[in-house]
Amino acid sequence: MIGIVLSAAQLLAAQEQSPAQLRLNALSLEQTGQNAAAEEIWSAISKADPANAEALAHLGLLEARQQHYETAVDYYRRALAIQPDLPGLQMNLGLTLFKAAQFPFAIQSFSSELKKHPGDLRLTTLLGMAHYGTKDYLVAIPFLQRALENDPVNLTLRTTLAHSCLWSRQYQCVVKLQEEAQALNAESADLDMISAEAFDRLQDDAAALKKLQAAVNANPKEPNVHFALGYLLWTQANWAAAANEFDLELQNDPGNLKAQTYRADSWVRQLAFEIALPEVERLASANPSEPLVHLDLGIVAANAARREDAIRELKVAIESDPNDPEPHLQLANLYRSFGKADEASAEIAKAKKLPPATHPSLQEMLDSIENPAP
Image 1: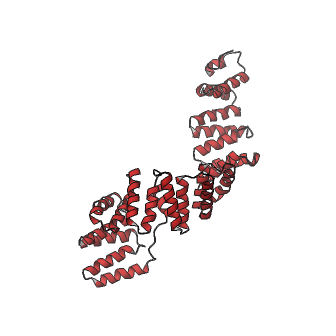
Image 2: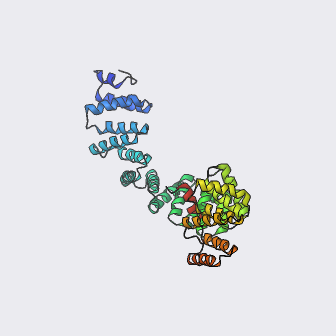
Image 3: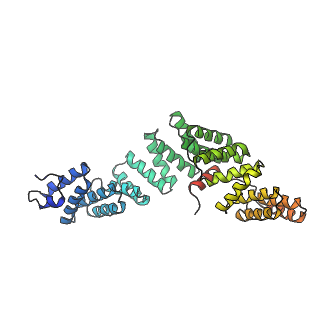
């Protein structure tokens, strides 16, 4: 008998090798990780018998192992067209589509398999994750809940479900998931941050701060954890504590523009104009569309009696965010300081027509960092 390490050409040339033996050799090569040799045999089998769905399916599997997902999907679909009931074929197609982030097509494959195997935990989990991948959170939630019931200490599942609840505005669902994790000693900084976002949406500032402080304690290197805590402190006008948290975030991530921007603003709010000025000038060059930077430049320039610079920057802030009343009020104060009462009154009138000043929610702020606008 010819050894299984021989090439497909040699195997095919050997008169004593039957198609059945070639198939067994290919399977053995696959199992021992000799993928290239196995691929040669399956290719030869497929060329000899183009209707051999098994050969096409194994060629798909070997391509998927090499992360050649597009080629793998093509093989799998050709095999399905020939023998749709081939065991494992639909599942392998779904997994490959999932890995290629082709979630809608993966969902079709997993759903088809789930009909054959109702209640299958793996398929339930994969369907939840695939719907999550399509941002169809309401559909993902029941699948993820069923999966989590069977594996309650799985942090990946719990965090994914918590994000799904958060992004579908089911904030109490997030709170419950975090409380369950705490009872199971299955907490994480990420989960604490998600629950803080939910508490912020529920307007429970104290609980949101508590969760962010827990997240900092759990993992002070968690991306954006210090920024999140600093931002909540900033919204509460706790400028000094906020600036400290932004400093800590920048130690973790020196390039975080949001942390740089809000740290500089925290300095301005504390009247630390000399420290703030070089930073806001740099930020204006790095991020010229950020209204907060121009507001700060206007405030600093006004304090230095650079009236024209202050007027220009405050007007840029107004153009960048027409719904924010603060630049109008700062401009009114500036006009009043040098006797332009009519201009000051006009700015106050404009501010009064705008909705009350609000800050983006913690969730919106973190989403803007993780998914920046193009």
